[in-house]
Length: 74
Image 1 (cartoon, rainbow, N blue to C red):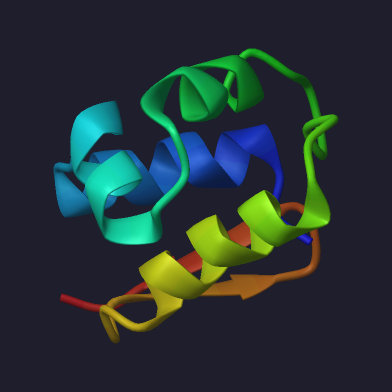
Image 2 (cartoon, one colour):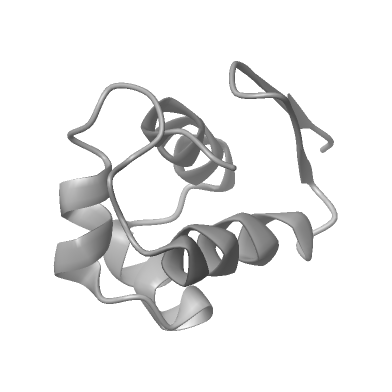
């Protein structure tokens, strides 16, 4: 799964706004904003968490290890 910290870090690395991520992932901006306020794995639908994670991965610039690491490639 993906944590709120990983969502924030990946967005920052890609220089995406919440609206950018919402458009690319199909998850509502208000949902993403709420997810980012949690510590650890957000309390959210698994489908939404997976959609966000997959959206980052398909860029080819971000991958995740466990719940505490994010690896980026420029």
